[in-house]
Image 1 (spheres, rainbow, N blue to C red):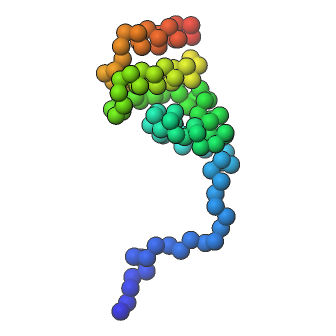
Image 2: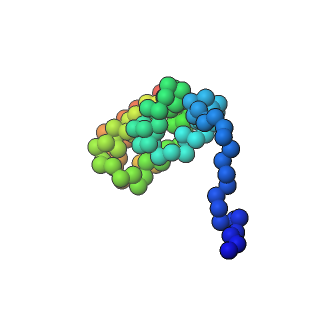
Image 3: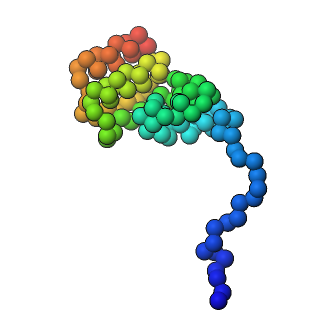
Length: 116
């Protein structure tokens, strides 16, 4: 019985495993910026010291989409404040959906009134 070689998975060479902590910072930042905000704050920054350092870099927090996250409004408000603080005034776009209360919007506005 003949089998197709395209149906079998490619063979892995015996190589040393990749140490994710040793990736160049720019590459790691490029990966992290594609994650959902909650994943960066709750998980990715806890992987290793280099990832924590990169997750605190203001450039990661320039554009943030917090819409359609399945987290309660109170927690989203706390996360949003962390995002604003970590951006250090570099936030250029934030999508907060329907959880933004007046106090949160005031917090965001106050942080950016000093940057203009």
